[in-house]
Amino acid sequence: MEYHPLVDASAFKGESANTAREALLLAEATISQTRKNGDFEGFKVDSLPKPATQPDMPDVEIVPYPVTVEDLPRYEPMEPLKPQRWPIAASPDPFTRPFLHVVNFHETAMP
Image 1 (cartoon, rainbow, N blue to C red):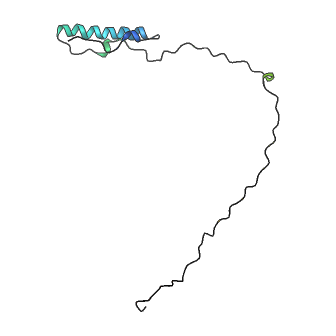
Image 2 (image 1 turned 180 degrees about the vertical axis):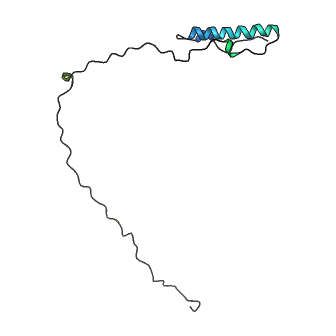
Image 3 (image 1 turned 30 degrees about the vertical axis):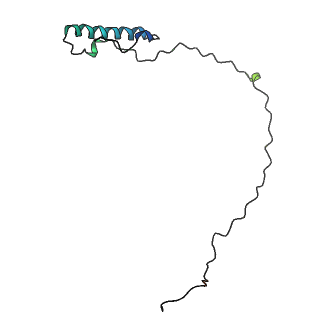
């Protein structure tokens, strides 16, 4: 059986890449050394260096463009559109008239 590391340390980039690479190599060295002895019971997290948890951000300097009053366009008042009247559709009567006449009504029982 051959051991291959799960993480490719050559792909690490940024300021914290060296620290992460060293921690990974230290962990793999500890595992391989104790595996050869046959008494590997794991290792303590305290034996590894603490990783940098802040993200690797490049130094960016934002230089705002100096805006003066001369850079702004002259104010031109705009005319609002004239209101339009929309036709209102006729609505049907919401209360329909009752249909009380039934032509084929045959009374079968006395009230």
